[in-house]
Image (cartoon, each protein chain N blue to C red):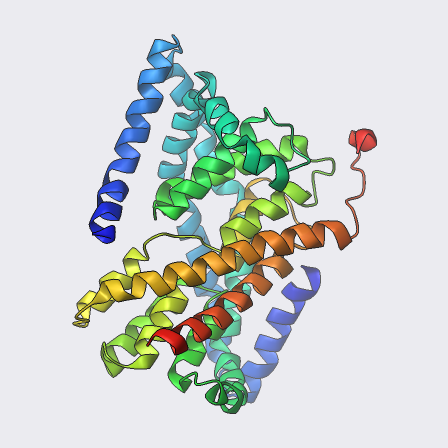
Length: 204
Length: 177
């Protein structure tokens, strides 16, 4: 991430100078910083709501019921996470919320899942295999109906916007499955996590 | 038919989940109001926690987009992609898709508006935008929320999966449309 961060910024400045767009590049620092805070603050309310709801769901045992139902799948994908961890139920709810295009609920629930995964993480500063798997599923963006895209197509007078659904579903499924396979492969070949300061990784 | 069904599910999913959570909470004698407010307290904390990560990612990506390098890369890629029957108009969508969701959607709307609904570029970019999530944003928010800065292979997997998604979109659209 250090190199990516460095390269993104340095290349932008050099390319901006070459293209005579240095001014726009400098201005984008301010607008980007502003946008980040806007994005974060727009999350506060909805985040509070879903974190509250998820806490009830956890306390009344709903999350563990969901975890039990999907156990056959998650046992393979998240082999380092205990089967009865609330993380499993959170992950299931987050992925299904994404699939139905409910991104307002999916992000807070996903963050809740990350917090549960962090509790199992042996090094609190680096990503565990389970986190990488969960984020691989998330970045692949599995969605059943691309609602926003269809809205744009209807807006420009596309006569049969639903014909876009089948190819999109096929493509998103291919990406989703490849992301899971890639995450599994990298888990095998990537350098394992180092032990954190709290040294709870003796069992691995 | 499939779409009406999906619309109904999308509309009812959240209300049903909320009723289910609250009802089950009451039955199990969970003090739902107290537990809700207790959990909701973290909303502010999480949102504030992700700000540094969002600033790092969003600022560097804004700079990257403002520098004009995406257009330069597009010009370089054009001959190769033309060979694969990828219209030049869709190249910015390909390059921006993993970096910024709103930008990808903006470029797609622009293509749809200027080229019209029946153009192949409109259909291809619709599939590419509809099938993806913004990798950099997702990583910043999720890892930022728990304070993780060493991503290990997460970014690489995300970008590879994005690449596979683009290749799949090109192949599928070539075949169908």
